[in-house]
Length: 228
Image (cartoon, rainbow, N blue to C red; front, side):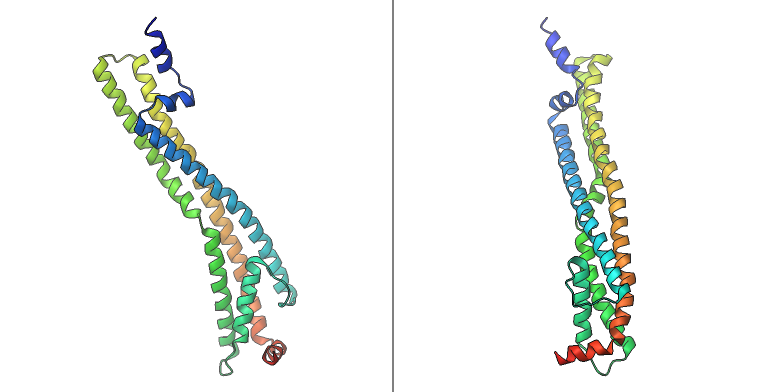
């Protein structure tokens, strides 16, 4: 009767039971992985929202450029900052420069503004990449440590039966399982989000060339800006 409670506890293979019975170091590994998972999902949801807005802005920017719309209108977000950078570069004119030089200068200013916005969109993606590459190894460390403890227990008890070995092995392998649960979504999300960022950047870049050419040859706008 005295041994029934410990045996029942040793065979508690639920997730909570595996965590509670694990070695303190293995518990630390599990907690670290859980925190990393929460951080990764926070980044994923935040990036999904921001990228959805960036895609809408890219479409609005393309529509504005293709239609030759008024650049003095209210432009928000990435498109607004890119347009503002282009117009400011256009207004800062040098009469000695050629049209090609003026266009190149305007496009550089817009690409620089776009680069800053892309860096903001990329913020946090490094966490996904790091978690995706390191989480399995962190979980494996917890597994190796747990298995070492299991073998130590076997040596002390002089009992190699499955009932003695299985709980410790299960606790150890649970750490690797958590590591994979963290890593697989992180890698998939990283690949998806980096692709989305690249597509948004490409959409803006393709239109920057058109807008740069328009600003470089728009003499009427030049005279109005000089008058101001």
